[in-house]
Every structure is written in C-alpha cells, then in structure tokens.
Amino acid sequence: MIDNQTIILAIIVSSIATYLCRSMGVIFSSRLKIDSWIFDWIKCISIGIIVAVISKIIIFPEGILESTSQISRFLATICLIITYYFLGKNILLSVSLGTAVFTILNYYNI
Amino acid sequence: MTATPIKQGIKYSFGTPAIGLGLSMFTFGAFLKSSGFTIWQSFSSTFFAFALPGQFVMADLLIAGGSILNIFFAVLLTNARLFPMTINLIPIIQNNKIPKWKFFLISHLIAVTAWINMFASYENVKKNNRFEYFLGLGGSLWITSILFTVLGFICSDFINNKILLGLVFFNPLYFLIMTLSNILNRKLLAVFILSATLGPLLNYLSPSWGVLIAGFISGSLGFFYFRIKNDR
Image (cartoon, rainbow over all chains, first blue to last red):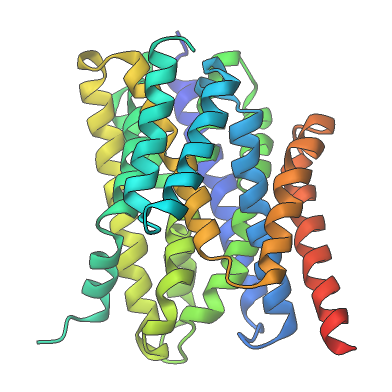
C-alpha cells in the first residue's frame, strides 16, 4: 500500500505539472491572432498530438488498458468508424456500439 | 427567452461529451480506490490535476514505485499537449473586457473533450460571449468529471471489473470520432493520417517523447505542405 504522504505529494506535483502546461499556453497566446498562419499551424499540431495520443491508446496502451487484447481494441475501433459513417454519423450510437464490442470481447477474453 | 452564453455552454456539454468523460472518470475513481487512495485524494486528483491521461500516469507511476520527480516529469510530458491546445483556444475566447487573470483561471478547464467541443461549436457563438460559453462548457465537464471520479470510487465494489475496463475505452473512441468529425479539409485529413501512422511508430522508438514528436511533425508537415501548395 502506498502511504498517504506520498499520494498527496504526487497529487500536488501532478497538479503543478498540469497547470504549468496550461498557464504557459495562456502566456504564449497573448499576441496570437485567430486569423494568423501561426494560429492555424498550432491547431494542426494540436490535432496531430491528439490523434497521436488516441492511436497510442489503441495500439500501445499503458496502465489498466494494457491488460486488454489488441484484437478487441482494433475491432471496437473498426466497429466505431463503420457505424459512424453508415448509421447517419450518430456519435453517441457509434461510440456506444464500439464500447459494447470492446467490453463483450474482453469479457469473454477474446 | 434566450439562454445566457454560460447556459448554452452547459447545455452543449450535456449528452455525449459529459457521458464520455464521466464514464472514464468513473473507471478512474474505481481504479484509485483499488490503488489505495482515499475518497478525498481521488476527489483532489480530478479537482486539481484535471486531465485524465496525466492522472492515469500519476497513479500508475505511484503503484510502480516511481519517485515524485519522476511523476512530475512524466505528467508534464503526458500533458504537454495542453500547451498548444491552450495557445489555440485562448484567442478564440479572448475579450478585451475580461481581465487577464481570468484567462489563467479558465485555462484549468482546457482538456481534450472541452477543446474538441469548443472548436466544433464556437463559430455559432458571438465573439463577446465565447468566454462565458466556454466557462459553461468546460466548467460543467470539469464538475461532471469530479462527481464521476467520486461516484466511481464509491461504486467500485458493486461493478464487475471487466465492465469497468470496458467503460474506460468509451473516451478514446469518443475522442477519435469527434476528431474525425472535425476533419473538414484535406489539410487536416493529411495531419490525421500522418499522425495516426507516426504516433505508434515513434512511440515504439521513444515512449516518453513519441506522441509529442509525432504530433509536431505531422501537424507541421500537413500545414506547410498545403501552405506551399496553395501559394503556388
């Protein structure tokens, strides 16, 4: 068991690290115009990082998702994309079906 | 009667965005309980360090026996995506009437779900109302996250582990489809394909930096390729 003091310290340093990223963003954004090319470039980088995070979670997950099978994550993702484009781009429906496929496959250790 | 911008933001977050984030936070709360956290520590984690991937890294490293310095740098790297996301979002909600310190406060609400949904909806909101609109959208997602972390902590004993595990996948699937639904031109499609390919490849070579480098390279390549092409 982890002791209480270590947990509290970990929460404090995580909060500082997380807020540092946001506050630096506020400082650097002060002179940025919404119609400038830099704004557009940073938006491309932000989307690039978000997509890289998602693909990492699906292909090389860490933590609790590490115990799930690669095939279940792939099939759930394929199910998500197919249902999204073939069932009228309904986000809630496609994400729910993808999650259901993932849960069922892992429930039966597939 | 017209709803105030803050109410419009709250209304927009209800539904799939809140469900997606809530389910993941629910699982996170259950995970913290099994890791030896107290209910107050679980609450504080989402209240102060709100950004799920970083929260998972913190808990995983604690369990693995990582040092406090190790946790600081791992969370900093994991959440570094918040830096460009904040640079992008602040000019959208910028308003000369609002004092600067309020932007430092509201930046705490910037996370992937709020960011994606803000970009999907801000053009329908008047420039002067966007700060309040985002306060409603991001604020309600933050409060939902805190509530669901605590709820997950309380309910963890009553829910099958495998079902809890299934719920945690709702959020990455939601991120994926929201990102895809916001791909409105060939430039962003190129960034998407490049990053989806480079992300896992570079992560394999460098688990700590792979995601950031992949995002930077694919975002820059996609952007400059189309900028040069359109200039010709």
